[in-house]
Length: 317
Ligand SMILES: Nc1nc2c(ncn2[C@@H]2O[C@H](COP(=O)(O)OP(=O)(O)OP(=O)(O)O)[C@@H](O)[C@H]2O)c(=O)[nH]1
Image 1 (spheres, rainbow, N blue to C red):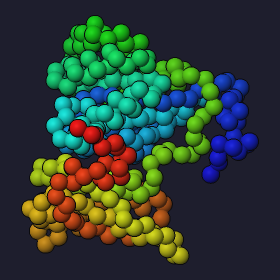
Image 2 (cartoon, rainbow, N blue to C red):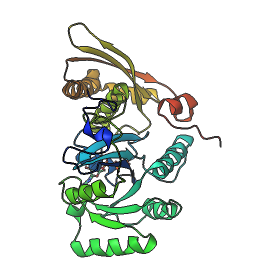
Image 3 (spheres, protein in one colour):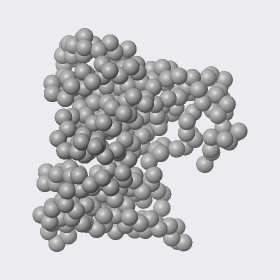
């Protein structure tokens, strides 16, 4: 793998092979839950770094995907959904999301154009007024709405905030995504790249592996399981034969949830495990032996230790 200090890597010197200057920077994706942030991130980065599921509030900690487009390296910060906080964990997520926005070079506000500005979107627009970075509006799910409604929505949002640009995209079909990337690549400041070219995510592998299992868990059980479940990778053992043994614990809050995760005769856990193992071995390009355990841990949503593990700050009030 090339490193930033590798003199062979032309980007380190601030100029790419064709002598055009390199650009790089951080882009925060902000938006109400279910706006499609994870789907868009996966499309733009071209590799799975975040969870896509039908369940709201799947994204907890900030994860990043890195896209290379023309001479630019675009580092995306996928923020947790911003919504009205109830529990402490929820409040930490909101704080973390805004924190992410303030660290970024550019802010992308992603709106589900079918839902428009109702509910959380309005609160986010309000919050964005205090954020000074350049803001870009991205209307998503354009495959679901009429063009004239899109134009009305764009006008309304631009009345509330002075967006530098408005894009209309569909994260699922990819429509409009190239234009967005062209813009971001040019708009980010000139400068050397932050990460080696072949690095797609700076999420530690253990955490990425936990995210993958969590995704399978939600995909399989999204009707029955509350989003309060959590996956941790406890052991990671590279073996001489080139395979890896991974042990993960799925934490739930109640015994009844444990039964759901296990399923009848272990059906559910088996299929979650198979799906996760398959994807992990594709990503890691090595055979994976995956062992899943289910444990009940009550009120983990109020446990400071969990916050630390997820890279969040425990709120004091
Ligand atoms: N029709 C359509 N559906 C989309 C599009 N983008 C995302 N979706 C769907 O919208 C739902 C939510 O997408 P996610 O990417 O999980 O949304 P998110 O903003 O990351 O959600 P949180 O993690 O809860 O913040 C999923 O069912 C996606 O398949 C789109 O462009 N068109």
